[in-house]
Length: 46
Image 1 (cartoon, helix red, strand yellow):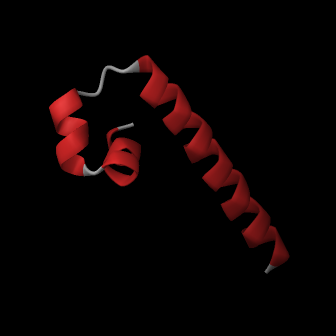
Image 2 (cartoon, one colour):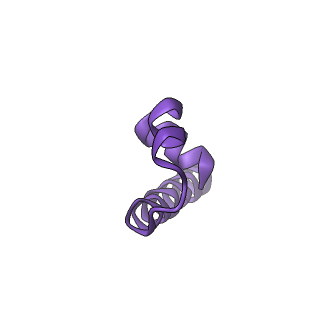
Image 3 (cartoon, helix red, strand yellow):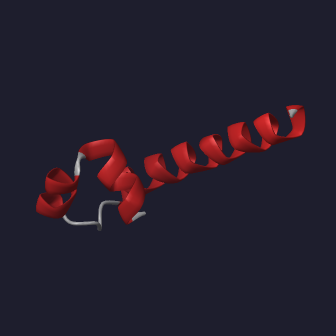
């Protein structure tokens, strides 16, 4: 989660707001899962 927040919001902003926001975490989880699916799809095409 911390990695995703750092990417999505910038490290400073994430640290300032803390890592406890459910809304941000669930959005983040969706983004991470989407990226993993895209990576899997790309791997299969190679």
